[in-house]
Length: 176
Image 1 (cartoon, rainbow, N blue to C red):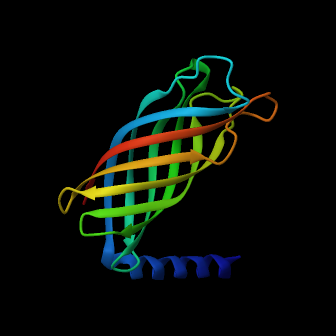
Image 2: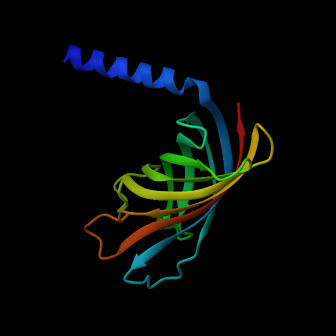
């Protein structure tokens, strides 16, 4: 066990040291426009929910045109119905590709942990895919837009409906 832990620490340190030359950290915040896709279709008025997102990230340069950007963010999602107003702590892990000096394309998986209520018919862990584009305003400021589609049913298996969360994010960020 001690050898395995030592090995993980050495690999982590060498990876961090190798990425440190192109490493940036930052914060981002923005607006969410989210909804839920129900199967079968919802029998109630399924309206989108506007919410907020805030978080911080690291961006590790893998090459001149590719970076790995893990994040930790709070995100208000779900739909407008009170039973489906969902808040998550999310961990997106994006691979960013430089399209030009100003534009970067990002894609990757995302895991989320529900916050607020437990045992309310909504699963505590969800998984999604994220894609988006980033526009650099300056060396430190950027705007971005993302689309997130849920891969997993957010409702407990005992419910007669299935629902997947969808989300559009418009963000503003600062890189240190």
